[in-house]
Image (cartoon, rainbow over all chains, first blue to last red; front, side, top):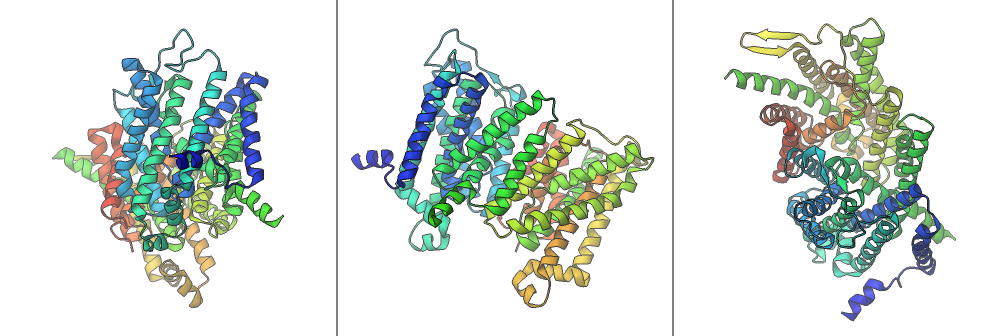
Length: 332
Length: 285
């Protein structure tokens, strides 16, 4: 038990400058809403933290596992719909809906994981994409989920920690940061757990891992299930933050891709990957989009710049931006 | 009975078109093991070529087919030379995201130029006509499109199996290294595969524009159908893509008749079940 707690909170295996960097990052996030009062900047910050949160979850299967999952949005959707529907139907406290959403997302992931991990590489990526699309279309088709109209959570008059509704975005900022830190600590522990080491062995060489007695498929299935559960948490947050969800907001293909892309741009399989990727892509997306709308610019330039960065990274730096940092450190 | 005939006929017609769309994807995957996410966007560009030619020039949209083929051919070659060649050296993840970036880039380039409006081809000798074959009424543009797709599919198939160039392409797809030892310029073969892929799907877009709405985001739907088709038939197998195209066409039309909101869901489920039962597809090797 003591060892587990030590593993969760210890960042000893990271070099000193990374630990200092993490500390500075945390301090910046903590004082940010106290210094910056501008509503849009705060919204950008919350979205950045949300995608860093998604990225950490995805990084388990996509980064440490090396399996390109293009269907994480379905888990976000399960989390969001569980929270929203339970709140609307039974007025359930938020904190009860989160674990239930996680269990549903993890359960579904576990159900589809076994057949899907018979596939590898491209085949697997496209299969995850198809599964996520089937769920999205079903959520649009069904009546009990609100169909394409979505679900609206009734607004409470006062600040409420039971239903997580607040008068100011500052609460949401610290709330999503809390979720981010819990998943960061979980990831820190996961990496050092038996499953984490097995997973990295499987990523680096499946045959060698299998010859050492690691059950390759089972390792992947377990990680995929965990990733599913972690994705649900961000979805639950989205439900109480936006107070309105529909399949196009919480389950679209673009969301799945964006989650994967933030990690890959930042650098898959590292602690910093999701943070760097989200720190670049999210502000770029939001500020560029807002600025272009302001000058009456045409819709689309933001995505073109976006996709251009992605193409350059794919062609020149497949290890992502963190890969550049690592290489510079080894040289210098 | 009448309904069944109608549905099966339509299913097969759509199947020929789906198979032809998937052809280029299967070819590219076969030759260099890379999934081209931008394939649907190439098709969208073919649709815009038909739309522009028929609305700004006094020409029939059918005239646009050779133009769409040429545009698609060069688009494929440029994509290969300036992007794919570089990402081929990287890991699989980089390959997926490289062509994905290309897809987004093309889609939003067209969004920027033409706006998100949904348009359609309004004039043309095939547009809006029906063909009556005794007890079935068929959309003439679909019949002609499917026929042309079938013909062109046969032509590409013949080219790959019977001509010298095609055989070199096939040899590269079976074993690129061995092909290189035999003196085949595999770089040229890769470029050619992208060219053919772009040209075929450009033509498919030109045909599809006759009866399908044109918008910058239309590619996504068709790329997913093409993925399902190629995976069902076995990645890289051209015969497989043909048969899988027919199956997907039938599933989509028959399923869509009974539950029209879910007509594409059936396709994805079919794909999922197929890969689970047989991961390599029907004709994969």
